[in-house]
Amino acid sequence: MISLKKLVIGPLMAAVLVAGCSSAATPSPIPPAAPPVTAAPAVSNAPAAGGATVMASGAVVVAGSNNMTLYQFSSDVADNGKSACTGGCITKWPALTVAAGTTPTAGTGVTGKLATITRADDGTLQVTYNGLPLYFYSGDKAPGDTNGNYPNWTPAKP
Image 1 (cartoon, rainbow, N blue to C red):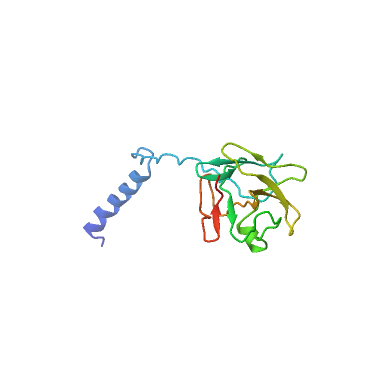
Image 2 (cartoon, rainbow, N blue to C red):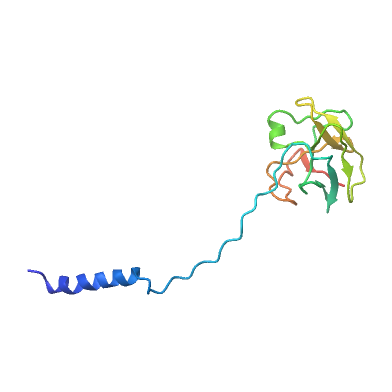
C-alpha cells in the first residue's frame, strides 16, 4: 500500500522540477560580460624593426617599440663591448637588440649616449646606453612594470 506521504510529495516534487525547467520560469540575471583579455606586450630579444627608439618614461628608460622598462646589469662593464648576461641569464633578461645595419635612436628625455655591441653568444647587436648593455625583464608584463628591480639589476635611468 502507498502511503499518503508518497502520494502527496511525489507529484509535488515533479511539479517543482517541471516548473524549474520550463521556459516560463524567471531567468536568473546574466552576469555582465568580462572585458576582453589582451595579451601583454611580448618581451623578446628579436631585433626592433628599423632600429630601436629608447626614451624616458618618468624616472626610467623604456623601449619605444613596446614601452617596456629597460634594465642594466651591475656585472656589465661600461664601454668594454661585452654583455655579462649569457646562457640562462639572457632567457630571463632578453637583450634590447637592433637589426644589422640599423642604429638606436634617442627619443624624448634620453640624453645619454646610445650605441650597440655585438653579442658573443648569438652575434646580434645589443643596444647600450652610456656604454652599458640594455635588457628587458621577462617578468614585466605591461608598460610601466619594474618587476626586474633585483639586486644587480636596476631600471636604466635617463
